[in-house]
Image 1 (cartoon, rainbow, N blue to C red):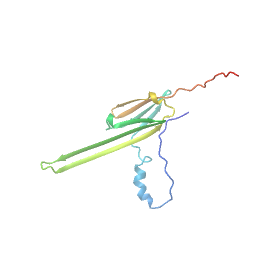
Image 2: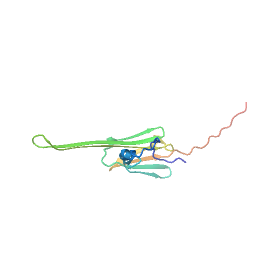
Image 3: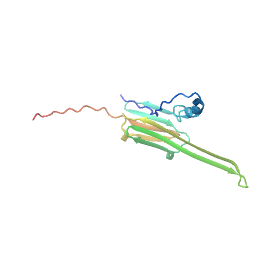
Image 4: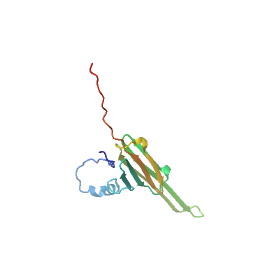
Length: 144
């Protein structure tokens, strides 16, 4: 039976260098193998699978859902800026924030044409019906 799972990048093996631990710390801590960018719950309800992803602070227009082959990818990006100036036009405060997230899932057992998505209160819900059981086709051949 196929199960839905997160796809993770494969990393190359490389020789051990003792001081690389300091150089790689930030990359390893904030990489996909470190902190999860947003929480995703996957429920199997028999005939369908439901994915619920928490995406607080994103607008519906900032979220993309793509299906390519047997891979479903959820991505979201957000940019925000604000500035405050005094009467001379000098900056008192200027802030910029941006963020983007991307997760991919194997949907080889899902009927991708019937996936439904909705986004309410910061939660993206995908209702994904499973493919029906394929019954082996039996046919009779005539002997010539």
